[in-house]
Length: 156
Image (cartoon, rainbow, N blue to C red; front, side):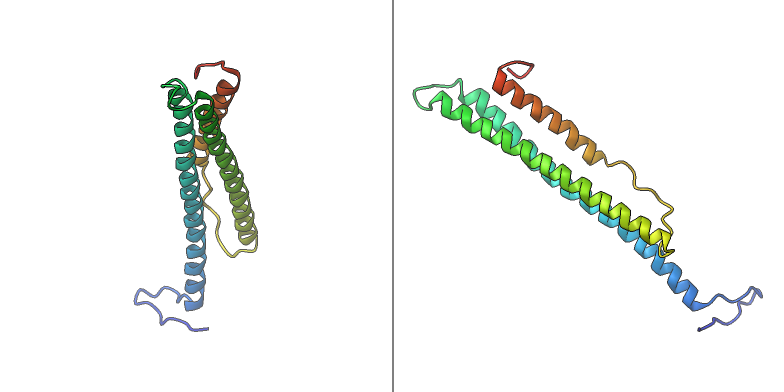
């Protein structure tokens, strides 16, 4: 064990190994936060793509289904728009499931490492605003699907 020379104030020397372990533990804790934020960014990209698919699909369903039926058959435009909305909703569901499973695994690993004393684990993982937004978009997407299929609701 390497020991630093005593400080001029006469305080007890701290082992260099202890400092190294402490710094490593803090870096590992910060890497968990970076990984959590990276997972949020991944969900945001799924959210953006799903939003684009749902909004394009709904627009095509509503707009092209009513525009000149002689150039574009209304049924094909509606089916294409409905398919885009379904694809967006399905992509969002898969993205949410993946995000929740990844974050659960990350939390479990972090708790294991904290129990072994490898990290401090004093900071908590806050609720993900991205996940809450994704769930809200999923509700809107499902409402749009119900509206398109049954011709009811505010989106008709």
